[in-house]
Length: 111
Image (cartoon, rainbow, N blue to C red):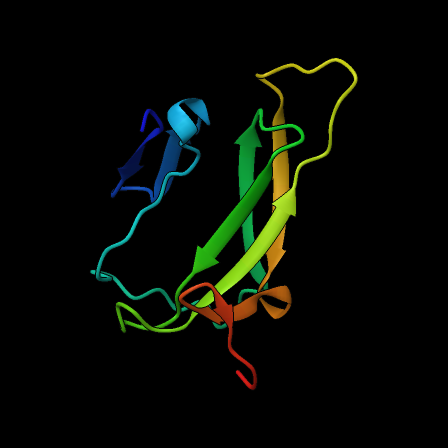
């Protein structure tokens, strides 16, 4: 594919460019956690995106070290703007309580 991304280990900032050219359309990061973050006082995460109007995004998080375990997913369809400016930043808030438990893209009841 032609999508690409980078991750800055010093500040946790993940930046990338997603394109659907060549039938592509995703970027991802997957690794064993080196640092475990205590997010017990957090209600969710916030992501800032540029562009993507009218596109559907899927965000997947893990809360365990099980590499192929349950994931928590949220899908968001970005709204369209009358005059699209690819430099505009859109903020997406993803509350933990709204995430759906999934395993291999299938919903897991009772989690």
